[in-house]
Amino acid sequence: MNKVNTSDIINELSNEMGISFQSAKAYTEFVFDAILKHVEKGEDVNIKGFGKFRMKVTAPRVCMNTYTGAKVNVPARNRLQFEMSRALLAAYNAGEKGGDTQ
Image (cartoon, rainbow, N blue to C red; front, top):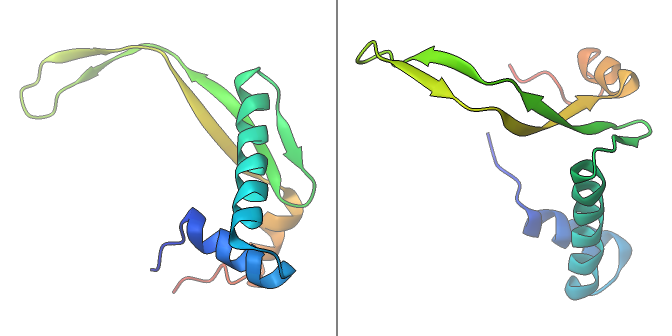
């Protein structure tokens, strides 16, 4: 499976919109930064037809090291969670968006 990085998205935006690479980079960074800024403030970011970003706090827990059998305390952590919109999820499950990876 090929991986897409931020530069690939910036190049696509630049080519599709007929703007410079630097402008496309500024727009792309603004969108990602805005999403993170709101999520860090505890706000859910809902993008209609795409999905929702939110911060989820995982509870502290005790795990076991599988190699040594020793118990390990894992502290609580913040985690960025993304949930697809129902419409996008339905489109992928129907195979309309290239969701069939087999």
